[in-house]
Image (cartoon, rainbow, N blue to C red; front, top):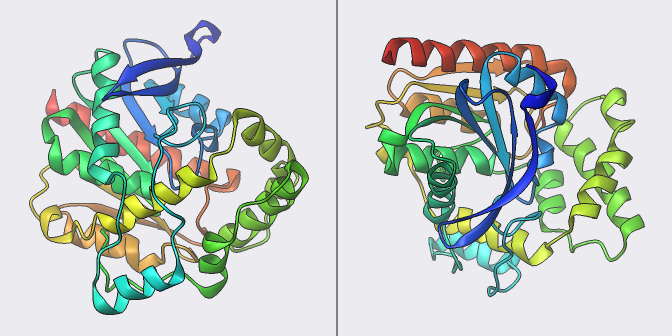
Length: 306
């Protein structure tokens, strides 16, 4: 990839909202959209990760989902309560939501429209994997291949997060920059579920960058409601014909390994890659294995379609 092939962040109108996006790679390379997870800005797809994918002949597009970072912040909805979660789990009473995953899938396709992309490879992490699944289900002609990372089908039978991971998800938002930086480090230590000193050394700088781009705690709450209100995709996934790859860590404390296994079992012909020692994060030490798998899967799908 040459240096001129990196385009700085820009904002475009799509699906009735503003979406902030950034492109790595050459215009004529295979288009690959990276969709981030709950409450996570596009920069959680690390610059180096994007650059390495671009070097594999992909036009890599990362973007802020609605309600996060520099994309449109919406309004409405109250903070989710433990009582609502109990009602959902035991009484199957649905959670109220300002929008759902289908709306976020439409954002993704809307961004592709705005960029003149007819179809692309979708790679989603966590909630991003759910959005990518929904986009594949609802707009199959727009998806060249699907890669679902540390995600799930919404099947309620998949084990819930560990107590520590769930508590972190439900914790009240930090009140200051200093508190945010401390919380950021604590959160990712829980999510990585192991010893990653090389990542921990970078966490304060990453937190500073996230904070500088702007926080939206209410938006994170709306995103969580969107996930919970969208229900299970499991039955619908049995009809997917798009080439699919599922990547999951063996020690994921938030979306348990069973979530990845259930996703792969629900999509006909899906490939499953379980990464030993990986939690709910994308540490640098796992990049070679993850990038190789995405490269082989997406370019393989493109070659078959050609």
